Amino acid sequence: MKRIPSKLLIAVGVAGAFSMAAQAQSSVTLYGSLDAGLLYVNNAGGHSAWLQGSSALSDTYFGLRGAEDLGGGNKAIFRLESGFALNNGGFSGGSMFNRQAYVGLSNSAYGTLTLGRQYDSVVDYLSPLSLAGQAGGINVAAHPLNNDNIGAQYSVANAVKYQSVNYAGFTFGGMYGFSNSPDFANGRAWSVGAGYENGPFKLAAAYDQSNNNLNGFNGAGATANENLVAGLRRTYGVGGTYAFGPGTVGLLWTHTKLQDAAMLNGANLRMDNIELNGTYGLTPALAVVGNYTYSFGKVSGAGDSGSPRWHSATLGLDYSLSKRTDVYLAAAYQHGNNDALGFVSIGGLLPTSSTNNQVAATTGLRHRF
Image 1 (spheres, rainbow, N blue to C red):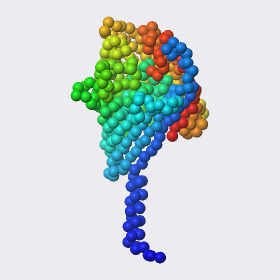
Image 2: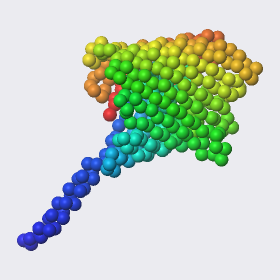
Image 3: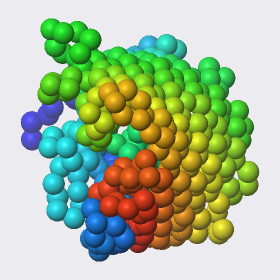
Image 4: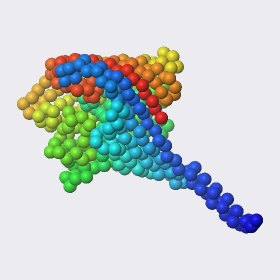
């Protein structure tokens, strides 16, 4: 048998060690959430309906995220995330990576810079303080028409985003979405936000603004809900949560202004949302969640006026079969006054009711991986 030279063995060993080190310094993770169940709506465009639905409680999606250690506290990162309907397999919004698609650099001392399709600062900072953003999201708990995007129903294209590191509990960030049009301002979006966490307390504030081209060009400021298309949309708010034992309570206020709103034939709409929410673990496996939101608005301009009002409430039970699988039962109710007729839609997700009221109930199974 021919003897292998010792130098060759050493070279192979060193190469193998470097290969293992390189593999250890980079990683790619597949993750996601699957939600399917039965949904009842008492009024969806004038008719009651029983549906086998997807994402009635929380979004159904899958994603890939990765990081490569570049040394010196630096990392190259990426994320590709796609929402889809579990009941028919179709992608949401007509594109594959419709939730997030970005690449960037992260530094342990200076923060993270990313480029691509991303969520705005309202989603990053205020949504986690709402019931729609807690525990993976309770979609039916979003505010009327999802007017402030607390429900994270859309993200921003062509975006450059910065997120700071944690400075003794304080974080901040900002995002700018380019219009990618010669008309620089038409279709752009930008937002800023900040948060603070100290023990059981969490506090946050955010501001978001987008310009939409009403003639068809979407740019960065496109929305998932056609009711929110406006020449100029501004949203800002503040909120906080407090954790005690197995429970959490939260209070949130947001303000949204739609200028030259498409759904109002060019009139303006101002909306305020005040949400009180809570979660409580009855046992290690069983939790109860709920919220109440009072939304009030003012319509003006283009010969139109009105003062729409909404009362929205959500109550649910969630039972964990394991760390990643749970079953749920939830109910939601929304009531609008006469000025809100035609815009009563729970969470901005369901077809609008033909009356001032809408009730929905859902039960299903959720698995996260």
